[in-house]
Length: 599
Image 1 (cartoon, rainbow, N blue to C red):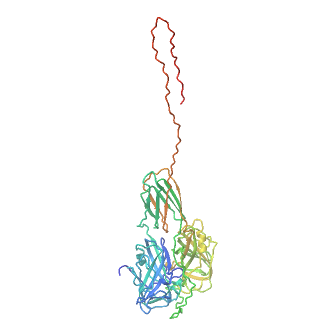
Image 2: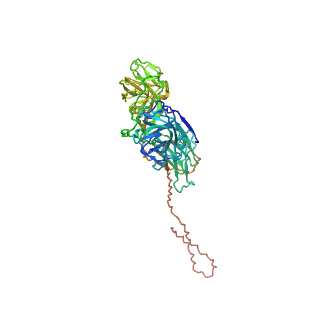
Image 3: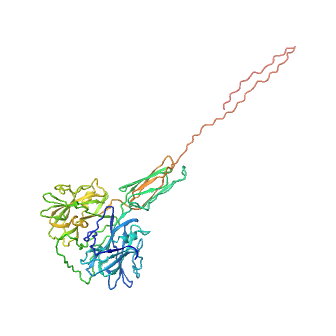
């Protein structure tokens, strides 16, 4: 087989949601994590050795069921952006039958940027093109009904799919399981809330190679004859992208939350648009945990616990109860784990601080103490609405005594680190919201236990002035009784983990508006440089600048015409010779002055 082959040892599974195993995966800063569950009975199917298709099986035999079959699993709405780097991925199965026979499995994906739904046509799984990358899995024994088991890291398989031309966030993926042996998992038909679940983590390239460009169509001259149209398309690439285009001067400033302002200097126009931020959409399908399976099975599902309490503080391979919460459409989900031994601490009744305890007694340890837990890099945007949140603990000692706990947060927009100063937990201001927790018995070492919903506590912290995404939160546990959890000092991968889900208070239907003001000049300037901080949704908006209208006003002036006026000239006088005979005097005409003519 061409490509990468990852050999997965029979390791303990990693937790997902509130149900997890003893070796969880920590989410590193800069990573995004998400989950999507099988959402239809036709998305987890079996194909027999003869090629017959079973679309409605109530369980998934991996792999032997009278013969070695092929199992196909399809996940819809896989929200991984194009260009992402997959850092971790796995599929979680809930145990439907206990089994311990040696089993060897191979896992590949379908080589398709958007895998089609399964059909009843013969060999509808095996006929699909497969990824060059294959991951091998030799699962450990499955001994607890309903417990979760996870595959090894499937990142190479997901990366090969995401790298294909045509991949878009929200597309579908298919995974195919072949091999020998038997492990039997719950299918969607038996319990949708325990159907196979895909967990994936990724980062975005800091220097994207597919830099978006801005395209401009401007007027050819300084005397516009029609309105130019500027079209800008932003494809989300994180974290920062620079756009350069030869066009009339333009400057773009994108503030991701809560709004964006774009200003364009173009021929004869300035366009200013204010856009309302739309939160990224996470598509997930919520299970229906109230469904009661009617299927009967042989062997019988009788739990035979064989583990006795011997608290040696070693990681356990047992997995937790089958309770999984999913993000609803429109929500974002993330997790952050205690990242330092000084971030899970105890304060005695006398006020002494224990910063390096190897376990966390909740609450009684010779006296009723206070436990403080600090989480760094909590990526909740300002203005988010918290819909679900909880803290998960890994069991360090088995206990069943009645226990009553109260959980509050520190009333600070960015909680400071714990110190060795006396009463460094109890002296901190606490949230008005408190959540009560009466935990059930903790009977399995290494199993995960989670608090009730802490959304009111997180919401109060996030609503404070000064809160910013990436700040730190502190939670304080008080009460009575005893439950003992693994601390960072014993196993960092099993230290307390905060899971949170939120939505943004924004409406995707909001339409951007633009206001235009005409410029007095239409002379293009030098080529601009555009800097964007992209927003996850892809959007296109159009600016149509207003062309100034010029009106000339003429005031007519009076017209004058000069007409020359003729004048009368005197007649020529002819001298007359005197005669001997006097004659009567000759009358000489008198000059008549010209008559004035008014034009």
